[in-house]
Length: 248
Image (tube, rainbow, N blue to C red; front, side, top):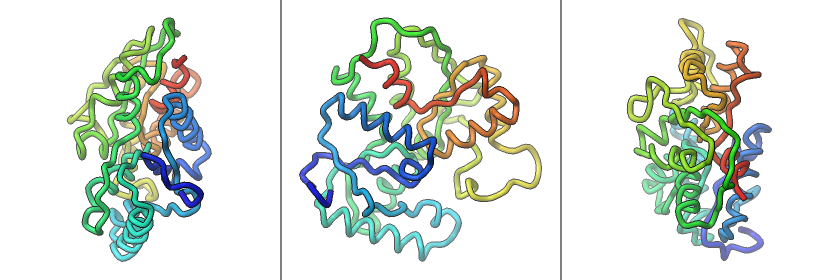
């Protein structure tokens, strides 16, 4: 944005998309999809700060508001109107909490954009695909908080050879990965780990791929699957990666 702020849409990369080695691949995959579709987008680069979600959820309201206000001032200064992000935590904050601080933007999740680009024919899928059984894990901040259930699923259904199977708890009855509300950075000391509970449910579907649309969910599901020694037979991928692999 500092070099050219004329783009139609801002891609909010997020902390995980910028710094987590695994989720950097998701950022790259999504960028490649946008480039295929000729989306005119920009990023903030080093000017992007944490969205403030985790600080607010863990009770550090002072830090959260400081981060949010700085981000709002930066975005408004560039005249940003539309934002896309691959992180539901960023999505929820930017969409529902930033208006409190003067940040009124049209915010969409990357699964919603991918779905629309497929519907519009701007991304085309291969005529033949590898046979695969996929189960999709609903992110709390995408699903129950913002009622985005179909956009992550519909692109997967469009892929030739893919069978989409649901876990026992899905959509508005979905189950948390264990990382929300700041729990990503806290240690569970009692009972069954939440991510292990959810990973076991995913494994029971006999899917070879767990599709996610959230960096927190991806990390927690990966760790859960490893705890059952199933990492060789079950792989966790973001929707952007799956669509890119199956696109022309």
